[in-house]
Figure 1: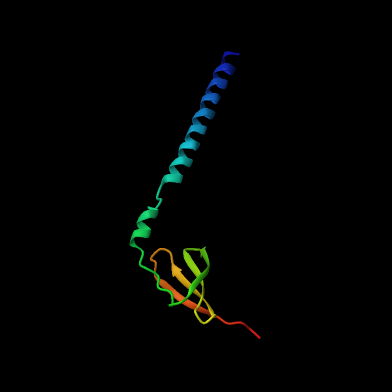
Figure 2: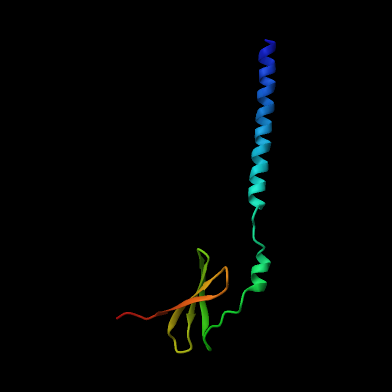
Length: 98
């Protein structure tokens, strides 16, 4: 009977210790290697859009920023920007089909 009490106490201590280690690992993983969000915005270059254009919609996907632009003449284009560097990757003109 004494061995059963000791075994129960040891298992309880192991469960509490394991739970504490799990919580510490989750907290440590959540705060490790997080980039400073403010540094990215202070070093990013300005993004030039055509004169008279307005931004209709914005989407961010897999480290890319996509701007849906309506140009001054009414045509549309997508401007693709790399979020890490802030550089313009390309422009996709949009045309209406027949």
